[in-house]
Amino acid sequence: MVDLVTRAEWGARAPKGSYDTLHSTRGVKVHYTGGREDPRMVGDHDLCVARVRSIQRQHMDGNGWIDIGYTAVACWHRKVFVGRGLHHLPAANGAGLNSGHYAVLALVGNSGLVEPTDDLLLAIWDAIDWLRAEGGAGKEIKGHRDGYATDCPGGPLYAWVRKGAPRPGGGTRPADVDEKPATGRAPAWPGRLLAYPPMTVGDDVETWQAQMRRRGWSIAVDRMYGPDSRDVCRRFQAEKGLDVDGIVGPQTWRAAWEAPIT
Ligand SMILES: [Zn+2]
Ligand SMILES: [Zn+2]
Image (cartoon, rainbow, N blue to C red; front, side, top):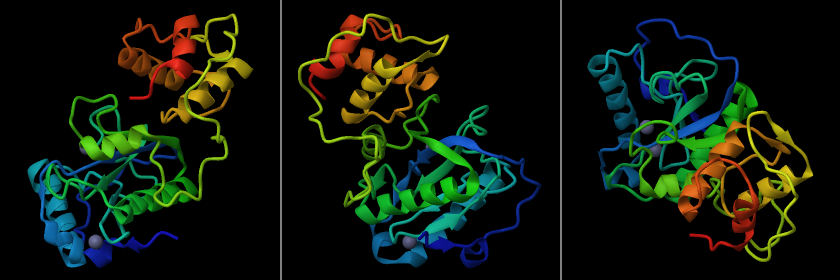
Protein backbone atom coordinates (compact mmCIF):
# COMPACT_ATOMS: atom_id res chain seq x y z
CA MET A 1 0.00 0.00 0.00
CA VAL A 2 1.51 3.30 -1.06
CA ASP A 3 2.07 5.84 1.72
CA LEU A 4 1.20 9.03 -0.17
CA VAL A 5 2.13 12.52 0.94
CA THR A 6 -0.62 14.65 -0.57
CA ARG A 7 0.10 18.05 -2.07
CA ALA A 8 -1.69 19.68 0.85
CA GLU A 9 0.48 17.70 3.28
CA TRP A 10 3.72 18.85 1.71
CA GLY A 11 2.51 22.41 1.24
CA ALA A 12 2.63 22.40 -2.56
CA ARG A 13 1.92 25.64 -4.38
CA ALA A 14 -0.99 25.48 -6.82
CA PRO A 15 0.06 24.90 -10.44
CA LYS A 16 0.30 28.04 -12.56
CA GLY A 17 -1.60 26.48 -15.45
CA SER A 18 -3.52 23.40 -16.43
CA TYR A 19 -1.83 20.07 -17.01
CA ASP A 20 -1.91 18.18 -20.27
CA THR A 21 -3.70 14.87 -19.84
CA LEU A 22 -2.03 11.47 -20.15
CA HIS A 23 -4.28 8.46 -20.51
CA SER A 24 -1.51 5.91 -20.21
CA THR A 25 2.27 5.62 -20.50
CA ARG A 26 4.76 2.92 -21.49
CA GLY A 27 6.04 3.03 -17.94
CA VAL A 28 8.14 5.12 -15.60
CA LYS A 29 11.48 6.91 -15.73
CA VAL A 30 13.51 7.18 -12.56
CA HIS A 31 15.36 10.39 -11.66
CA TYR A 32 17.74 11.67 -9.03
CA THR A 33 18.28 15.27 -7.93
CA GLY A 34 21.84 15.51 -9.23
CA GLY A 35 22.78 17.81 -6.36
CA ARG A 36 24.06 17.43 -2.83
CA GLU A 37 21.52 15.76 -0.56
CA ASP A 38 21.90 16.31 3.16
CA PRO A 39 22.61 13.00 4.97
CA ARG A 40 20.51 14.25 7.89
CA MET A 41 17.46 13.80 5.64
CA VAL A 42 17.53 10.02 6.29
CA GLY A 43 16.68 10.68 9.94
CA ASP A 44 14.29 13.57 9.46
CA HIS A 45 11.30 13.40 7.12
CA ASP A 46 10.71 17.14 7.58
CA LEU A 47 13.87 17.65 5.55
CA CYS A 48 12.34 15.57 2.73
CA VAL A 49 9.30 17.85 2.78
CA ALA A 50 11.47 20.96 2.69
CA ARG A 51 13.49 19.48 -0.19
CA VAL A 52 10.42 18.72 -2.29
CA ARG A 53 9.17 22.26 -1.73
CA SER A 54 12.51 23.68 -2.82
CA ILE A 55 12.47 21.55 -5.98
CA GLN A 56 8.98 22.81 -6.80
CA ARG A 57 10.17 26.39 -6.26
CA GLN A 58 13.13 25.84 -8.57
CA HIS A 59 10.97 24.30 -11.30
CA MET A 60 8.30 27.01 -11.12
CA ASP A 61 10.41 30.11 -10.47
CA GLY A 62 13.66 29.00 -12.09
CA ASN A 63 12.55 26.85 -15.04
CA GLY A 64 9.27 28.70 -15.48
CA TRP A 65 7.27 25.46 -15.41
CA ILE A 66 3.66 25.39 -14.24
CA ASP A 67 4.54 23.03 -11.37
CA ILE A 68 7.17 20.63 -10.09
CA GLY A 69 8.27 18.60 -13.10
CA TYR A 70 7.93 15.14 -11.55
CA THR A 71 4.91 12.91 -11.31
CA ALA A 72 5.92 11.73 -7.84
CA VAL A 73 8.86 11.89 -5.43
CA ALA A 74 10.11 8.87 -3.44
CA CYS A 75 11.74 9.63 -0.09
CA TRP A 76 13.93 7.86 2.45
CA HIS A 77 10.97 7.03 4.68
CA ARG A 78 9.14 4.93 2.12
CA LYS A 79 6.73 7.75 1.41
CA VAL A 80 5.60 8.95 -2.01
CA PHE A 81 4.99 12.65 -2.55
CA VAL A 82 2.33 13.49 -5.10
CA GLY A 83 3.95 15.75 -7.69
CA ARG A 84 1.94 16.40 -10.84
CA GLY A 85 0.14 13.16 -10.05
CA LEU A 86 -1.89 10.66 -12.04
CA HIS A 87 -2.78 11.25 -15.70
CA HIS A 88 -0.85 14.52 -15.90
CA LEU A 89 1.99 15.09 -18.35
CA PRO A 90 5.28 15.45 -16.45
CA ALA A 91 8.02 17.90 -17.52
CA ALA A 92 11.15 16.22 -16.21
CA ASN A 93 11.98 13.60 -18.87
CA GLY A 94 13.16 16.05 -21.51
CA ALA A 95 11.28 17.69 -24.38
CA GLY A 96 9.39 15.15 -26.45
CA LEU A 97 9.90 12.38 -23.89
CA ASN A 98 7.27 13.27 -21.34
CA SER A 99 4.24 11.56 -22.80
CA GLY A 100 5.97 8.16 -22.88
CA HIS A 101 6.74 7.78 -19.20
CA TYR A 102 5.79 9.10 -15.82
CA ALA A 103 8.70 10.76 -13.99
CA VAL A 104 9.57 9.51 -10.51
CA LEU A 105 12.24 11.38 -8.56
CA ALA A 106 14.19 9.68 -5.78
CA LEU A 107 15.73 12.05 -3.23
CA VAL A 108 19.20 10.72 -4.08
CA GLY A 109 21.95 13.13 -5.09
CA ASN A 110 25.40 13.05 -6.59
CA SER A 111 26.98 13.88 -3.24
CA GLY A 112 25.89 13.46 0.35
CA LEU A 113 23.20 10.83 -0.09
CA VAL A 114 24.20 8.86 -3.19
CA GLU A 115 23.38 5.22 -2.36
CA PRO A 116 19.71 4.27 -2.21
CA THR A 117 18.50 2.34 0.84
CA ASP A 118 15.95 -0.47 0.75
CA ASP A 119 13.26 1.91 2.02
CA LEU A 120 13.99 4.36 -0.75
CA LEU A 121 13.89 1.62 -3.42
CA LEU A 122 10.64 0.34 -1.94
CA ALA A 123 9.24 3.88 -2.11
CA ILE A 124 10.10 3.96 -5.84
CA TRP A 125 8.31 0.62 -6.25
CA ASP A 126 5.30 1.90 -4.29
CA ALA A 127 5.14 4.85 -6.69
CA ILE A 128 5.42 2.51 -9.69
CA ASP A 129 2.71 0.20 -8.36
CA TRP A 130 0.47 3.19 -7.74
CA LEU A 131 1.06 4.57 -11.25
CA ARG A 132 0.40 1.14 -12.78
CA ALA A 133 -2.75 0.53 -10.76
CA GLU A 134 -4.32 3.96 -11.09
CA GLY A 135 -2.41 5.89 -13.71
CA GLY A 136 -2.28 3.54 -16.68
CA ALA A 137 1.51 3.12 -16.47
CA GLY A 138 2.94 0.29 -18.54
CA LYS A 139 5.68 -2.16 -17.60
CA GLU A 140 8.79 -0.21 -18.55
CA ILE A 141 11.14 1.04 -15.84
CA LYS A 142 13.87 3.21 -17.28
CA GLY A 143 16.29 5.93 -16.26
CA HIS A 144 16.20 9.56 -17.34
CA ARG A 145 19.42 8.91 -19.30
CA ASP A 146 17.67 6.33 -21.51
CA GLY A 147 17.08 8.41 -24.61
CA TYR A 148 18.33 11.69 -23.17
CA ALA A 149 21.84 13.08 -22.60
CA THR A 150 22.10 13.31 -18.81
CA ASP A 151 23.81 11.56 -15.90
CA CYS A 152 20.43 11.17 -14.23
CA PRO A 153 19.54 9.03 -12.28
CA GLY A 154 23.20 8.66 -11.22
CA GLY A 155 25.36 5.52 -11.08
CA PRO A 156 23.82 3.50 -8.23
CA LEU A 157 20.18 4.07 -9.19
CA TYR A 158 20.85 3.50 -12.87
CA ALA A 159 22.62 0.23 -12.11
CA TRP A 160 19.53 -0.83 -10.18
CA VAL A 161 17.25 0.13 -13.06
CA ARG A 162 19.41 -1.80 -15.51
CA LYS A 163 19.20 -4.91 -13.36
CA GLY A 164 15.44 -4.75 -13.79
CA ALA A 165 14.77 -2.74 -10.60
CA PRO A 166 14.81 -5.72 -8.21
CA ARG A 167 12.49 -5.21 -5.28
CA PRO A 168 14.41 -5.26 -1.98
CA GLY A 169 13.62 -8.40 -0.06
CA GLY A 170 12.54 -10.17 -3.24
CA GLY A 171 9.31 -12.04 -2.77
CA THR A 172 7.60 -10.65 -5.83
CA ARG A 173 9.83 -11.88 -8.61
CA PRO A 174 8.19 -11.31 -11.94
CA ALA A 175 6.35 -14.49 -12.92
CA ASP A 176 8.17 -14.66 -16.22
CA VAL A 177 11.61 -14.95 -14.64
CA ASP A 178 12.45 -18.54 -13.83
CA GLU A 179 15.23 -19.95 -11.72
CA LYS A 180 17.55 -21.09 -14.49
CA PRO A 181 21.14 -19.91 -14.12
CA ALA A 182 21.84 -16.72 -16.02
CA THR A 183 24.65 -18.12 -18.16
CA GLY A 184 25.50 -21.46 -19.73
CA ARG A 185 25.36 -23.31 -23.03
CA ALA A 186 23.21 -21.45 -25.56
CA PRO A 187 20.26 -23.39 -27.00
CA ALA A 188 20.31 -24.06 -30.72
CA TRP A 189 20.10 -21.03 -32.98
CA PRO A 190 16.47 -20.79 -34.13
CA GLY A 191 17.51 -20.30 -37.72
CA ARG A 192 15.99 -16.89 -38.35
CA LEU A 193 16.97 -13.33 -37.48
CA LEU A 194 15.08 -11.62 -34.66
CA ALA A 195 14.68 -8.09 -35.95
CA TYR A 196 12.47 -5.03 -36.07
CA PRO A 197 10.82 -3.65 -38.18
CA PRO A 198 8.66 -5.50 -38.95
CA MET A 199 7.93 -7.09 -35.59
CA THR A 200 9.29 -10.63 -35.15
CA VAL A 201 6.93 -12.78 -33.08
CA GLY A 202 7.38 -16.28 -31.71
CA ASP A 203 8.77 -18.79 -29.25
CA ASP A 204 12.35 -17.94 -30.23
CA VAL A 205 11.73 -14.29 -29.31
CA GLU A 206 10.33 -15.36 -25.95
CA THR A 207 13.35 -17.61 -25.31
CA TRP A 208 15.74 -14.76 -26.03
CA GLN A 209 13.75 -12.17 -24.04
CA ALA A 210 13.54 -14.46 -21.00
CA GLN A 211 17.29 -15.03 -21.20
CA MET A 212 18.05 -11.30 -21.45
CA ARG A 213 15.79 -10.75 -18.47
CA ARG A 214 17.63 -13.48 -16.56
CA ARG A 215 20.84 -11.60 -17.32
CA GLY A 216 19.35 -8.57 -15.61
CA TRP A 217 18.00 -6.50 -18.50
CA SER A 218 14.73 -4.66 -18.13
CA ILE A 219 12.75 -6.28 -20.93
CA ALA A 220 9.20 -7.55 -21.36
CA VAL A 221 8.89 -11.28 -22.12
CA ASP A 222 6.01 -10.92 -24.55
CA ARG A 223 7.14 -12.92 -27.64
CA MET A 224 7.23 -9.69 -29.67
CA TYR A 225 10.54 -8.33 -30.90
CA GLY A 226 9.75 -4.63 -31.28
CA PRO A 227 11.56 -1.35 -30.60
CA ASP A 228 12.17 -2.13 -26.91
CA SER A 229 13.73 -5.51 -27.62
CA ARG A 230 15.82 -3.93 -30.36
CA ASP A 231 17.00 -1.29 -27.91
CA VAL A 232 18.07 -3.93 -25.37
CA CYS A 233 19.76 -5.88 -28.16
CA ARG A 234 21.74 -2.83 -29.29
CA ARG A 235 22.90 -1.98 -25.79
CA PHE A 236 23.89 -5.60 -25.19
CA GLN A 237 25.79 -5.72 -28.49
CA ALA A 238 27.62 -2.51 -27.61
CA GLU A 239 28.52 -3.91 -24.18
CA LYS A 240 29.89 -7.11 -25.69
CA GLY A 241 31.76 -5.51 -28.60
CA LEU A 242 29.49 -7.12 -31.20
CA ASP A 243 28.25 -5.37 -34.32
CA VAL A 244 25.57 -2.98 -33.09
CA ASP A 245 22.80 -3.70 -35.59
CA GLY A 246 19.92 -4.40 -33.19
CA ILE A 247 19.38 -7.81 -34.80
CA VAL A 248 19.68 -11.09 -32.93
CA GLY A 249 21.73 -13.21 -35.31
CA PRO A 250 23.76 -16.34 -34.44
CA GLN A 251 26.54 -14.44 -32.60
CA THR A 252 24.24 -12.24 -30.54
CA TRP A 253 22.05 -15.24 -29.76
CA ARG A 254 24.98 -17.28 -28.47
CA ALA A 255 26.41 -14.35 -26.48
CA ALA A 256 23.09 -13.99 -24.63
CA TRP A 257 23.88 -17.26 -22.88
CA GLU A 258 27.63 -17.66 -23.14
CA ALA A 259 29.05 -14.16 -22.62
CA PRO A 260 29.92 -13.34 -19.02
CA ILE A 261 27.59 -10.95 -17.19
CA THR A 262 29.37 -7.69 -16.47
ZN1 LIG B 1 16.31 13.24 -14.33
ZN1 LIG C 1 10.94 11.29 3.98
